[in-house]
Image (cartoon, rainbow, N blue to C red; front, side, top):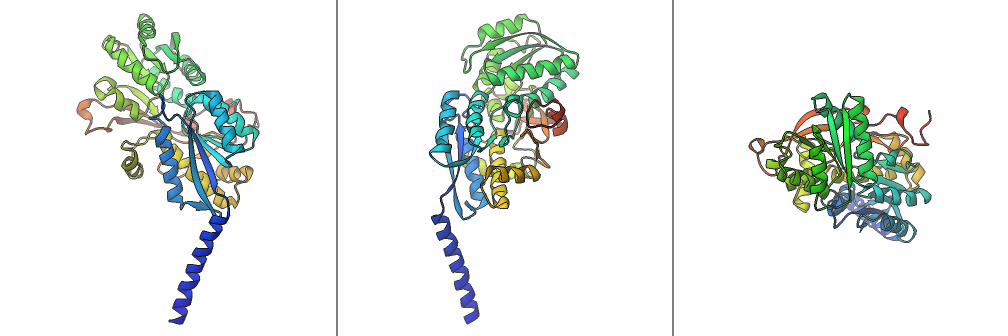
Length: 401
């Protein structure tokens, strides 16, 4: 009995000492720079903050004797504000890693701050291919999707099916411009033609003049090089103009399950779209999504699922490296394959691109859906080596050729 009691006391003392040690050391802070209130709020926003907190909780709440804290701030889709937030998080609040960043222009701005200060930044919501090309850095990771992958998966499938003439409605900032450029390259390379394009301001409520130009082009496909609320509004107004009934296809080059829910299956049915994740793929995705839905009341987008996966990968790397030093942690992250509900055999390359499978989905007809959020049917799984830009094509200065 004495031996048993001494063992219990020793274990209790060890736990108590660990708790005291965690209190003595400063917390490990990770910071999300998110769109909390505008057109990308459903895609990232509070859901991304929740996903990061879920990863921290599942990891155990502390690492290297330090309590883990999750911070979040609203960049309001302003690049200068995103840069200021990144600067404040790193310089004043002691943040070691920045996650998500939500949009491309804001990501490019925040990325420069993180790069200058030698801190890790993991992009989940932004898509611009520049983030793993010209704007790459030794501590940047582009985790979920990018404009090249979206264009490659959606554009290639469309042209091969005979949809070979395109007109683009493009959000007039880094992400939209890159998405139009990358999709145009896929279309022309595959034998199609681009008949024109028109650029619209971010967060547009009235697409009528842009849609009339697209309709007049007689293109078989109107490619939407935008995202979030802009994509939702463009598709809804396309239906009101009778564009789809007139025989033209509308192709959202980046859409999420939350967008399809906002549009409704009656209007969205038949749309082709590329995604990095869908909540109803398998038992693993359903299990995570059920837990997420209990908190957020809707399934996770690919960006939000990617936040959980990337934060967990980061924390495991910190533990394995025995330090938060960016170089040491990045080495572990790049050396360690990613195998979870989000990615199987995912790998972070030297340009920061996390390579994983992408999926081509078709939006279900209302008659095919079993209920809300049952929106997609899988058409194809595209290996990451085929979906994403090759290292040979990379413009990242870190890539040795």
